[in-house]
Image (cartoon, rainbow, N blue to C red; front, side, top):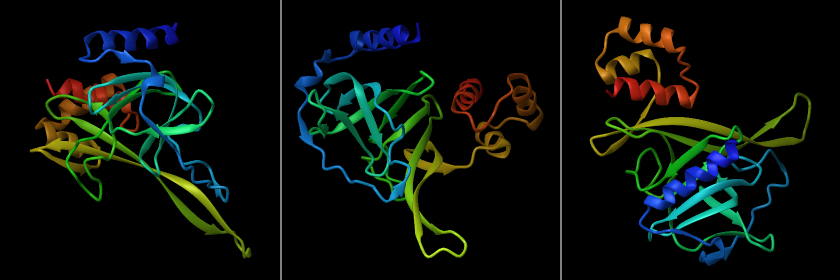
Length: 218
């Protein structure tokens, strides 16, 4: 049922888009030179398995595919060709949607103002898109560590999560807590506490943050 709703989502979006969804084989592509992290524990991807998704190029073309991965190290979207070859788009990707492991649709886009070492080509997940938009930046980096009394070095991927507000045409990195929400929306502490208690809001859950921003943006 959820897979059906996912497909229905894509078809409904395509019906309203300027360009119809294209056959994925029509996409201009270039072979991907894969960096083998053979000595690193973990993987550089948002999900280490192929997921369904929708890709919107900056020229307006839209593609739908079930073999997508988001490489957080290179900050690029890759796909698997019909013959199994890993590829990336030759044309610039402006936005893409991915079906998460719990069957939720995650929306990503670039083209936002440069901030904190990120540029206009950096991708952000859209948590809330409204009067005060909220974005999430997920990244990975490699760390090295040594076990006690061991000469060998262990390399592993670590994941970071940061949130940004878009205000006055600038991206502002923010820590999401009660004080931030009170200041941002100009509300009273009791008002916020009542809502958090009523809706059981968890600041660590993106769906709860969307609900929170939707409510107070009104």
